[in-house]
Image (cartoon, rainbow, N blue to C red; front, side, top):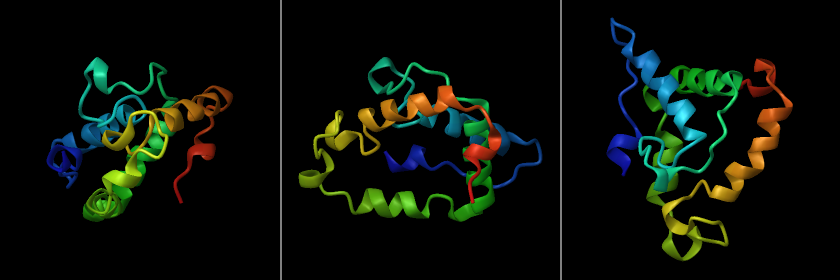
Length: 119
């Protein structure tokens, strides 16, 4: 799973890295893993606000080549005996379907880019 989860976001002369960062950010709100767009991987049917997608995509790009460092560490240290922890989706879904569902009211309540700013 780790290979496609962390694609190369190094700048490309044609700007493909920008579209890829946007795709990753948008699909992270809707699928787990983000690159699997099958119905089995869907965690939300709600379209995320563009401001939230923009903030996440910019965070990926701002982090540069190290954008995946924290995620890789989390995946490398995930333990099957603790991964489920009552989160729907269990060990195969560390984000958790319930966590994603809890975020939905926030999306509907606010469309301001400032509220999604990554610091």
